[in-house]
Figure 1 (tube, chains in turn red, orange):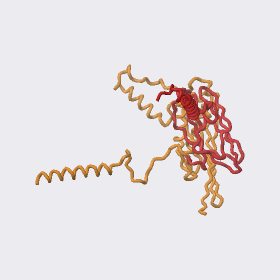
Figure 2 (tube, helix red, strand yellow):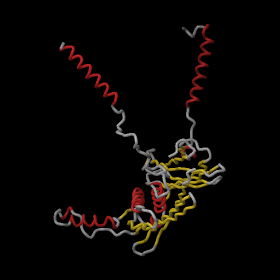
Figure 3 (cartoon, one colour):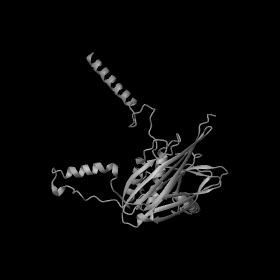
Figure 4 (spheres, chains in turn red, brown):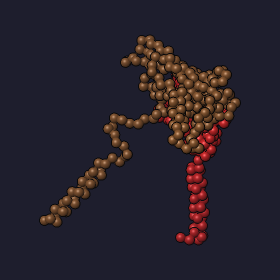
Length: 141
Length: 204
């Protein structure tokens, strides 16, 4: 089929337009939404979706060569909620360091904000993730 | 006739081989079905006696606090030794397991050093005496009188309060740790970790 023939010229143009549109739409659907690496969602790994407990704030700084992290946990429920959490530490290349930190239990009262602290095990740790779970979730540790 | 027999033998052998292969376990696991490995870092609440999560929480909290203490940052890789943590609770608790975990966590940081404690001293002196017994080359053996005295020692206590009311049992643990300057006798740092565990034994 010769698309340059006048008979097919309009069809050809339509085809190109349609293909471009499809490509654009496809590209739009596959491009991952850019997430700020320092945002709270980027630092928190949830085991299941938590209904009432949320990590509402995170602060981090180097203290004596070791990365210190403080996170604020908010309970939006009118009942007390149990949280389990642990820190995962990463080096500058994204490798997990010393992945032997234990899960810690924390009781968060109704409507309360609690803080949790973590200290990197070695000076090589430059990044972190906070793993959180609560008994209502599917992934209870 | 013998040809048929040998054919049958081959078929039986192949069938048996296939059968056994089919039955073979596909995972490198020999199990009775009653035992399985769990997560050693999981939160354990089987009973309200002292457990693995308590040990891990205390060690984590104490090592984090100690590593951030100003007195340790004032010196370059200070030398610490671990003294006793006395158990004042009514249950058996291996306090050395707690201090061993604290020491391991602190050593991993690379910011402090630890001298052998009293429990390991016998092994240390035995090794030095063995090396200086005349069996070893003098140039290759470690010399006597070269051990370093620790700048600080860590010691503490663990205490508990247990209360029962009807079916409820409440256990409160308090782990106290302090860092003492060996030369001056000054307590340079102290911290506590408290744990409360409550269980309800009601059947209904």
